[in-house]
Amino acid sequence: MSEPFSELVQRRLATIRDEGLLRKRRLVEPLGEGRCRLNGRELWDFSSNDYHGLANHPEVIAAACESTRAHGLGARASVLISGWTPAHQALRDQLSQFEAAEDVLLCSSGYAACQGAISALIEPGDLIFCDRLNHACLIDGCRLSGGSLRVFRHNELDALERQLQKAHSHNGRRWIVTESVFGMDGILAPLGRLVELAEQYDATIICDEAHATGIYGSCGQGAVTDLRESGRYDVEQIDRRIPVRIGTLSKALGSQGGFIAGSAELTQLLWNTSRPLMFSTGLSVAACAGASASVRLLQEQPDRCRHLRRAAAELRQTLSEAALTLLGDSDSPIVSLVLEDPERTMNWAGELEAAGFLVGAIRPPTVPNNTARLRISLSSVHSPNVLDELTQILLKLHEASSV
Ligand SMILES: *Cc1c(COP(=O)(O)O)cnc(C)c1O
Image 1: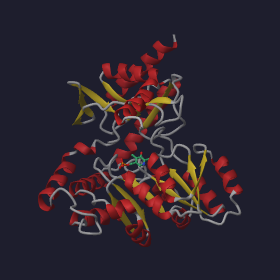
Image 2 (image 1 turned 90 degrees about the vertical axis):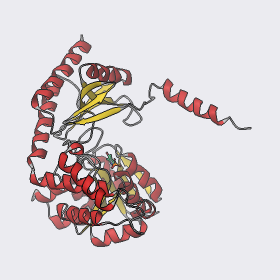
Image 3 (image 1 turned 180 degrees about the horizontal axis):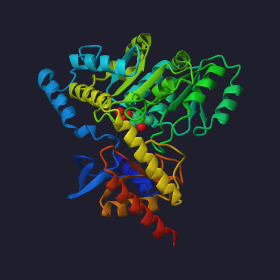
Image 4 (image 1 turned 180 degrees about the vertical axis):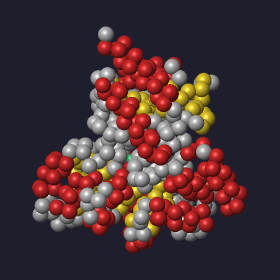
């Protein structure tokens, strides 16, 4: 007889616990304005991907409520059956224009958008060059596609180039799969050089902009838009080499869902081949209308993105001057402070919480071994005073741990 099911569960849990990696759900009540309540205490929330506090913005909430009253909450069916409502149409039109793309597909999550697009587009026999730190949904999509996976060291394009050279005589298509801003270290991918490599070795790039949507671009279109607008590359070449751009509505836009921007033919193909799109109910009406309001707010208030990136760059500079270990150079609102040891990371997170700050503690297997870290997510609603206070606490913790 096989091991009883309850013992299987206990054994697996014990393994995770023994490695010090057991995660627990915590009840966090979002309060808006960059605050939340945890265990009855109000804290500054530096753990959220809601980089502009839009999830609680009155106009976003009003838009979600109004459209829900008019059209109901859920989309009722897959978009291909009857789940395409006026709210979906409006968001599609708005995002296509925002992203300067022929068309945009709406998906029930960024995860579904990435996994579905990659597994539908890449075919068995193709070669996939995948950054080692790519998000799980990108890896899952690659695995499901049946293509052969080649993993290159994080953002190391020399390593990538060597692998591309080796694949010189390969018959299948070559794909490069990357995030534009890596979610766990906040570092940008060298998109311009990636486009050059893709041009040189005839590869196609799929770019996940989950942490760039709402942050980069003149008002949050993403990092590919910055590249397109930089004038350093031919826009046609960028579009040819990065024909698939994926974003999320769930982070900086404060809503829920994902999208894929590209040509009208790309979206038509994906409607007919991406399994999460075909077999999952469409995005909720409330999520569509809320995301629409967020995009409109970012377009009306482009300073939000600039302020946030400046605050992030300043925090990074202060911390690195104090010899704290940050990953790379960036102005993204994800400030990753590497403490290596999972226990030490949990201790710092506990100290910060006691001082009134909720910060994400990220441990393996989400990040590689010995790179456990505090992931400090800034929001444009945090005032300079709040950032100052957080900085002082981090510096004190650092001082205390270096004596
Ligand atoms: C969060 C994230 C996703 C998934 O987006 P959701 O809308 O939360 O499902 C995809 N890719 C990356 C890099 C992410 O960080």
